[in-house]
Amino acid sequence: MTDTDLAAKLAEEAGRILLDVRDSGQFEGKALGKAGDEEANRFLVAELRKARPDDGLLSEEEKDSLARLHKERVWIVDPVDGTREYGEERADWAVHVALAVDGEPQIGAVALPGLGQVLRTDQPGVVPPAPEVLRMVVSRTRPAREAVAVAEKLGAELIPMGSAGAKAMAVVRGEADIYLHSGGQFEWDSCAPVAVAKAHGLHCSRIDGSPLVYNQADTYMPDLLICRAEHAEQVLAMIAELPSD
Image: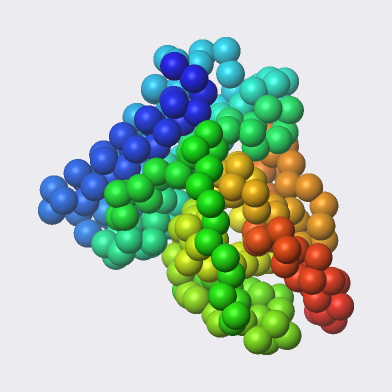
């Protein structure tokens, strides 16, 4: 099985596990999120260690081992991206399975179980043309200051949405045009979405234009920009012009 087939298969199956946990009626709210996280993580970690025992592994829900820093190939997974949305029985949450090679997100799959869809790096679709009024996805609860400011400059519409994966895939699916985040994330929040977005020809970088590098000792990632390639230069310039705090 290829790495991409493996990523897609595991993301899809983890999504089914999460839906089963939710549909069981045994949990709700935060307890549902915790139970789903644990079940999906247990499945993903076991399957990856069985299928790719020589690779490194980084999961949000697993104790980190810095042995991964000495690996060329490292799987980076988020069993439930958007635990709040999952617990609220919304559709804007995701499962992330990615493979970073020498720090670069090369292979990935993002499952959107609430939509019955898996987007993967080896099956890129055509991103639909942008509308006249651009659309920017932002956090439902804490829209980034930079995103709001850039949206105002562009005259873009703000679209509140849940998980990072759901927001990134909204750009891939043509439901949005820009995803600008500056509130801080971790590697598992963006590795698979960035891999998929790049495979679809989208621009992916830090908000200063520098590359997104994965499998670092410190897994915190302060910011990112995912957008159509034709908008990247303008958006990065607008970010650079914003006053610092």
